[in-house]
Length: 192
Image (cartoon, rainbow, N blue to C red; front, side):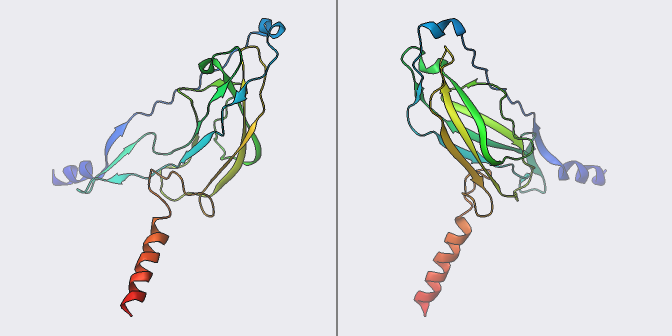
């Protein structure tokens, strides 16, 4: 009986199902081309947030919590655009890999997509661990209006891991250790 209790306590404490909502596709109306030839424009540079997969987190009693989404990496692009005829919430965005090699399971839409509340979410299987390989590639994003006019694209560098930017990783800053070491070094030098 004690063995059964130990086995039950040692497994993951929580497992919530992961629900990924696929992006909503942007649909154009070719009949609008006759009256709309002006392309939309990005309203400023989009911002990018990178979150990497994460390993199970300890609960303090020998157990761990995990979700079925823990192995997912995510790139969130916050973007805004404007057009002379298409309302901003109805503008689509064309996202393509311009250079580099995204992760193998990187879910890039096959067509133009709508932003949800100004955000575009792209996912890949990254591994349920806190130790990740470097990723580095460039996406290009361009706005698309209801008539199918495509605006100028902007490059979005996506980099994370060894030598990359320190975004994501379950919300834990990856530059904390070097900062802590610098503070300790300064303290030791002051004591001398």
